[in-house]
Image 1 (spheres, rainbow, N blue to C red):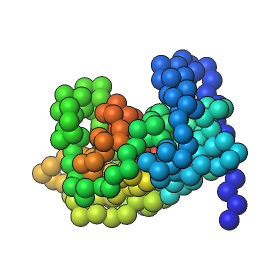
Image 2: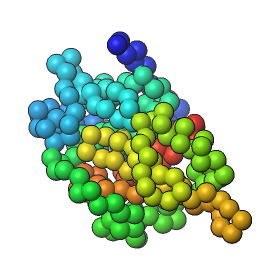
Image 3: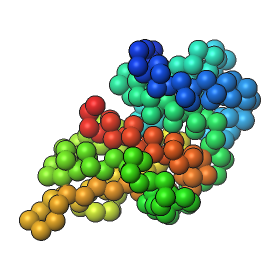
Length: 212
């Protein structure tokens, strides 16, 4: 099957938004050995000068020299949070296996302090959209390669990168309790990503689930 890749270039105000992280991370990515990056991250490297990686049931290309992503999903590639996630993952992923232990963001080292206020995981918009629509949540999750798990009323596990998966857990609204959504992570995640990038990952995932 031939995949038609779409490019995304950030302009205007988004250019200002990217400036705080991109130059340094892209420069660091260009300086590293592709073979070692692939060994650690599970990505593939093409002699044409790009990495290719599986994410949310899609293939994504990362071009360090051109500082851009390509994907058959333009919406996903356009997400600043997603771009930060992929570049950071290539830089920091470790060659270690998942533990199989699911934890909340507050259980990660430093997480109870970090994941609050403006850094709270994006549960509220998911609760509003899917709090009474478990079927809609499941259908949307399946389009992103989600697979059912046994948490809450309905939960879906997403393989967002080769060494990183997370779960979104939904408790449906009823007469007694409001809807509730939580995120769960394999406890190894903070060996691969810093907390701010884990937060960016949840933002990017929520954007896709909400269709934004």
